[in-house]
Length: 313
Image 1 (cartoon, rainbow, N blue to C red):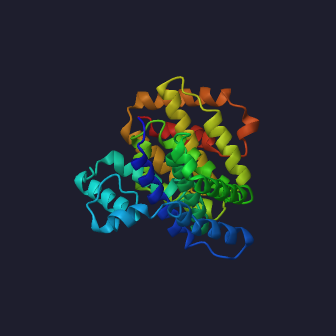
Image 2 (cartoon, one colour; image 1 turned 60 degrees about the vertical axis):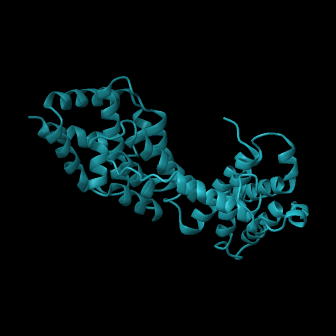
Image 3 (tube, one colour; image 1 turned 30 degrees about the vertical axis):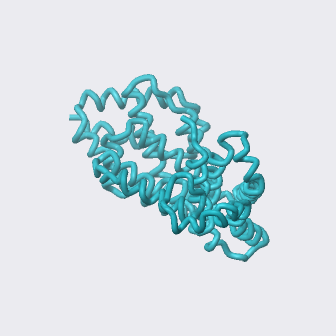
């Protein structure tokens, strides 16, 4: 579906607005910070300075006229957007699925796993991507008209690239997010998700990652094990894989005491034959893995061998 110039202009205005607000939180502590702050301060002039005052001379202020979609001014776009939001307002459903997704985003999104300063940088980069969607959607006169803004966006993204490259906090957040997303959303709303939420595992993992209890190298190993080597031949194999992954992560962040609680919950919920099938697939899955690659990552397999049978009736 195409975008009209009105929609593109509205998108540009609101993304520039949010970027400018984020710029207020950037300090002048380093040359990079100072440069980024300056570039963000130049966004509004890049958007508004190209506009001619001919319309104002002929028709007067846009703030004194009826607002339409064709009014490319801060007043017109702000009011038009507000009217559209009011007209389309709909109360969100608070169903269980949305709650689980919100819970994951609150604690284990890339943004939530970063420090406050790094969150600002990540948000700035995300908003510049939104800006390019509206500005560069078509190679047309609209894009040429905003060539200065276009160059400014590239400069800001280049500064962000420099920050991402020299701060592995962003890499750690990415790896943790992908690891947990793979574990929890292979099968989206099930007992494993419910258990993680009821025991606040999301929060505990977030706190451990921020304190750097787990090294970047360990996270990379876990990511390779969990994401790159996953096997989904059968449902039982998938469940065995996911259980091993969560036990691996729990071991990495030092919460071994939750092991028995998790297995008891499984034993109380799943039929014995299903547990036996999962255990069988788990053992097969482990035999197919390269043990040298995962020997230092976690001890989930030992947990299964020692404790799984006690929950089989």
